[in-house]
Length: 191
Image (cartoon, rainbow, N blue to C red; front, side, top):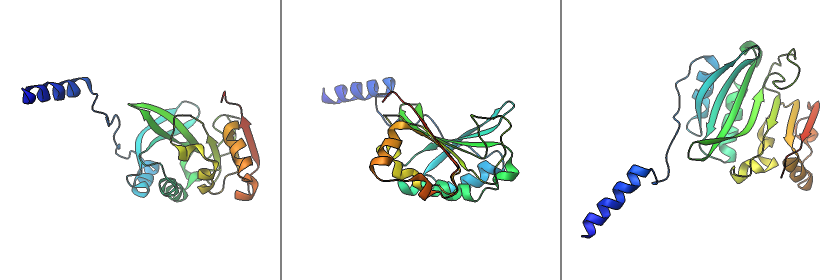
């Protein structure tokens, strides 16, 4: 009798998908120089999901964080430093985290041009635009301003008010972290 009940329970778990740990994404194959270079650099800490051409804009490369720690971000930053941003045209690297069975939250965007500003903005020689997003359901590492100090050469920073308030409390001065920083935009969240 116990065996029959066990089989029934296991069948229900398999049928309904309640087993947890469902992986909704996979590490895609590289489809150009940027995705190949990054894939060779980032290992399994982040997965390359897809590339999206944005009409009259540029190319967005979407990554999924598989491991939320400083080492994973450092690996990503090191991979980005190997890219020749000026030769890639307008490019955006979007990093997401899966927060619940397939739902993605954006952690940050890194680009070589102002992808939400002036459409005619110059293309930088590096990925100097960092746009941090905030989601209360993301891992604690992504809710800490200290995490983002791993980036190098940031010239334009967009940061949510929640993280800026934490940065102020922790004594983080973005201009000290990135001496070449030209602009900080703090945007309001409802948190």
